[in-house]
Image (tube, rainbow, N blue to C red; front, side, top):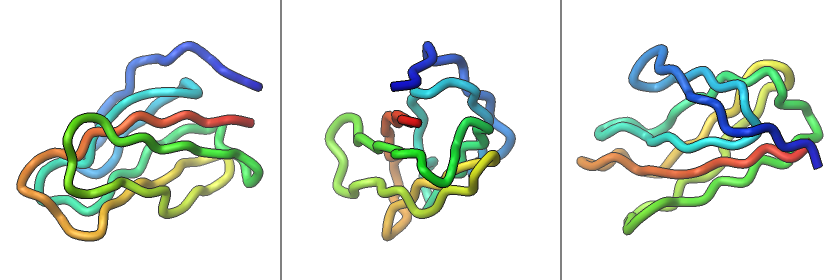
Length: 91
């Protein structure tokens, strides 16, 4: 189990953030369908767990992961409110 303490994530745009830790929390912004988390520790064998936070009508899911680069989390339909979630990368 390779866990690093959660470090701050920095927004690049409404749909992209940069993070360096193995765990963190963020949100899919209102009226967006996905967010990409740039994180170089992602591998093709990484298990990435996504957990919704709070009362949400939509469940965020892992849409794709790019080894050494990023992973993307999305929802089926954009919402008028933010969809918050936690993530955990296990390598």
